[in-house]
Length: 468
Image 1 (cartoon, rainbow, N blue to C red):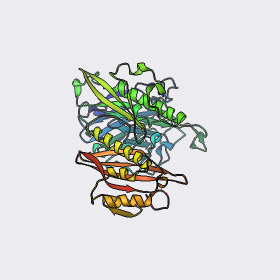
Image 2: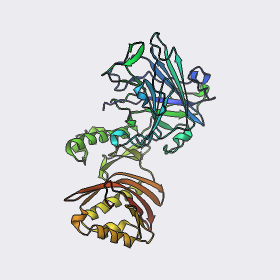
Image 3: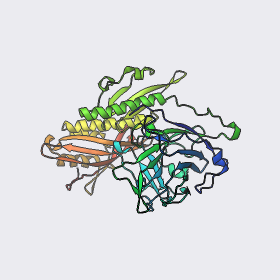
Image 4: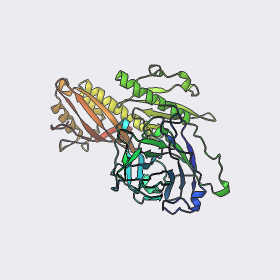
């Protein structure tokens, strides 16, 4: 993707909540700064949008407030059912990634009829994610004001404006940080306006066939894809009020250059995998210039994992301090914290299990299960209890190395629940000489006597056979 500097915005705390009526005439809105005018999604070297769009933001203890003013000579809309695919109309869209890890983010779309579509995405579509449009925003407030007439091609309108109040409590579940935010916290946010070219036929608006929509955004993406959260703007939340507001208050995160460098590796890896059917294991293979990492104490460290790869980079913070960040094959970007050592050990356990299985060694494979009668293994509608019984089940079902085949794990999601427990979701695939099997699994790990062991295993098979 093209190198583009994300937009930045200081979001001030509202002294009084605005009235959510679609009109942006509240005193509090007049004191809020406007964003820059929206640009083409691909960036400034593309045509300037035909119609002007600007947004404002505020917050308080209960809501994240968003207002947008859209110039529009013909305001129209057709969709009236909640959770319709709203961008099939002209619309306004909000994207929020609270902790900036590119995963578990929110989207909301609204048309001129005040019809909304709220979605949660565990990861971007291009990384295997899918939208959960069953996710809702309890307590959401929205309003639209039309400066003109709706769905009337006989006149010229001035435009439409939108007000949105998103409750912090709706964002808390997947924020992985305080919501409402603390003074100085920065979230990744972007706004998009979808605009379709139209013609008037028989007194009605009709989209021009064969013409794709325009995408006008606050922070350009460099690509026609809003689902690249690393390109969204930065919103810094501030408690500053009145004359204490500082135009230079925004604080650039010192880890930003390192995070951008890691995402450059991620995008190069995607291209490399497409061409070579494997992941690269070094900067040289990716043909990335060493100068990209000249300001870092050591080069990025590549590591193979059960799901693909992860790359670590120590990012200097000044005063001889540094912070390690990582990126992996599904674009998740994160700072190494106290849970990371546990996640690494759990992924290493699965890698060790796959290696033992592929050698035909079920006994070694079973060493990472809890050696207890309380171990449970569920599959095919049956639950086996106890370590010994589980091992016997595996020996019975896979009596030879040929029956065991070659096992791989993919799409791993490791969630450390507390210091001594974790859950892992993923996919398994078994390739044998005469067939291939695959399915999902969920594992519960506990740390017992200093080791992470599996205490519960639920594996499902996608074919109509007894599950393995």
